[in-house]
Amino acid sequence: MSNSKKTWIYNLIFVAVCGGLFLFLWNAPPETTAKLPHDKDHERFMNMGKKAAEQFCDDCHGKGKIYPLPKDHPPKYRCLFCHKQEK
Image (tube, rainbow, N blue to C red; front, side, top):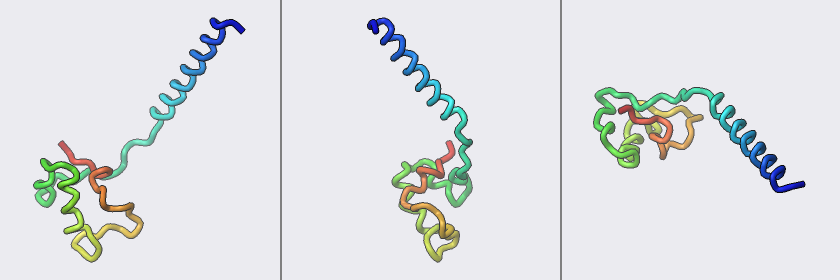
């Protein structure tokens, strides 16, 4: 097989993989995780960095606190990884 044909085959494979990846991402479900509420309780965390703000989440959302997290909630040490701050 000549180099020209090999190049075309590799290019077609590359385009097919890129197209498949594009379609996969295009059909991804919409984001459903609630954002960090923009209310008086969370207002002070809006201008903080993520890691700085996350240190305070356990104060209200820890076990036995005002708004405890459900038992099936994923690890809570990275709250703002999923619950993004609204700008």
